[in-house]
Image 1 (cartoon, rainbow, N blue to C red):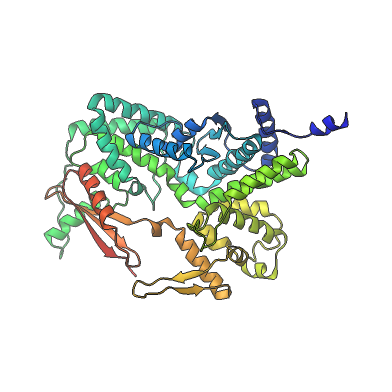
Image 2 (image 1 turned 90 degrees about the vertical axis):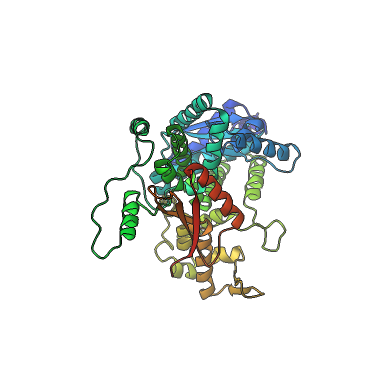
Amino acid sequence: MAKPAARSRFLFDQADWDFDTLRRTFDAIEEVARKDLELDVYPNQVEIISSEQMLDAYSSIGMPLMYHHWSFGKHFLGHEHLYRTGARGLAYEIVINSDPCISYCMEENTMPLQALVMAHAAFGHNHFFKSNHLFQQWTDAEGILDYLEYARRFIANCEEKHGIGDVEAVLDAAHALMPFGVFRHRRPRQLSLREAEEQRQERLAAAEQNVYYLWKTLPTRPEGVSETDAALLERKHKMQLPEENLLYFLEQYSPVLRSWQREILRIVRNISQYFYPQKQTKVMNEGCACFVHYYILNSLYKEGRLTDGAMLEILHSHTNVLTQPDFDDPRFSGINPYALGFAMMQDIRRICEDPEEEDREWFPDIAGKGDWRAVLKHAWANYRDESFIHQFLSPTVMRRFRMFAITDEAKDSYCTVSSIHDMRGYRHLRDVLARNHDISSQEPEIQIVDADLLGDRCLHLQAVRHNGVPLDATSRDATAKYIERLWGYKVDIQEVDAAR
C-alpha cells in the first residue's frame, strides 16, 4: 500500500496525457511561476493542435487568424514534405503575443514535453511579451486578434470585389517590402480599435474626393535659396522626408493606388510592425523562456512532483534546444540564441549569488547582490539583444562558448584573429557580438528622400552602405520593381557611404 501512496505525489507518471493531467500540471507550474519567480503574465489560453495544424501555423507566420495568400500554401507544402520525410522536426510549441496569450502544444507531445512547453511558452514567453518595453511600445496584445480578424475579412471582401489576381499582386509587393514597412526610430501613438476604424473611414472619404496628392501654393522662398532647392525643401517638409517606412509612404502618397489597395498596405505594415520587437529580442526572449522552464521544472522535481524518468526526458529536450556546435563543426551556423540567452541568464544568477573577483570587477552593481530575480526581471523589461549583451555578457560565458573575434578585410587574402581571452579581448568580443545582434547593422538602411509629384514623379530612394558593403544587385532590382508596382512610376535607388 505504500507504493501507490508515494506515486500519488507525482503530477504524472507516464508519457500519455489527458486534459485532467494537463490542468493539474499547469496549475503546479503556475504556482511556481507566480509565487516563486513572481512573473507577470497575460491570462493563458493553451490549445492542443495536430501536426498538420502546427504546419498550417508555420505557413501563416504563426498567427491564429490570417488572410489568404498563395505563399502560405507554398510554405505549408514545403514544411510538410520535410516533416513527412523526416528531414525536419516541428517546433514543440508556438506562442502568440496576445491578451490572452495563446500557446499551441502539439497533441503528439508526451506529457513531460507538454510540461516543458507550458512552462516555456505560457509563462516564460508570456512574461517577456508583457513586460519588455519594446513589446509595450510597438504592439497591442489586447487588440491584435480583433485586428487580424478585421484584416482577413477585409482582404476576403477585396478578393470578391476586385478579383483574387489584383489583390494578390498588391500583397506580393507588400510582402516583399515588409522588412522596410516598420517605424524603427519613432513611436506612433497607439490608437484604439475605434480610433483606427474612424481614421480608416476618413481616409476612404478623402480618397474619393482626391485621386492625386494636391500641392498647396508654395511660400516665398528664403533669400539666397534657389527655386529648385526651395521646391525640394518644401516637398520634403510636406511629406516628412526622409521616410524609413516605405509601405507607409506608399500608402499615403502613391499616385496610382486605390483606397482598398492603400488599406492592404496598411494591414501588411501593421503586421510587420507587430513582429518588429521579436526580431530585436530573439536572444532575450528565448533565453527568458528557457530559464523559466528550467527553473520551474527543477523546482517541481526537487519537491518530488516529477518522476526521474520525466525529468530525464525534459532535460534531454532542454539540452537539444541549447546545443551549440563548435565553429569548426559542420552543423555550425552561428551563435544559438537559445544557448546564449540561457547561459547569460544562468550566469547572472551565479554572479548575484556566488561571484568571483572577476565578476566583482565587471559587474559591481549586481555581484553578490543576491536578489537575482529582480536583476533578471529588470533586464527582461528594459533591454533588447544588443544592449543586453553589451551590459551582461561576462568573461565566464565567453570562455564557456570559446568565443573569439576575427577581422576580415576585403583587401587581404587572410583573416586575422583580433580578440582572444584577455582583458582587452573580452571587451572587444562583447562589442563585436553586441553589434552582430543589432538589426540596424544586419538589414539594409533604405529611405525615401524625394518624390516630385508635379514633375516626373520619380521616387528617389537612398541606401546607406555600412563598412562599404553594397546592396545585392539582384535583390535591389527586384525590390525596385515591387516599389514601382505600388508607386506607378520610375524608382531610383542610389547608394551612399555611411557618415563617419
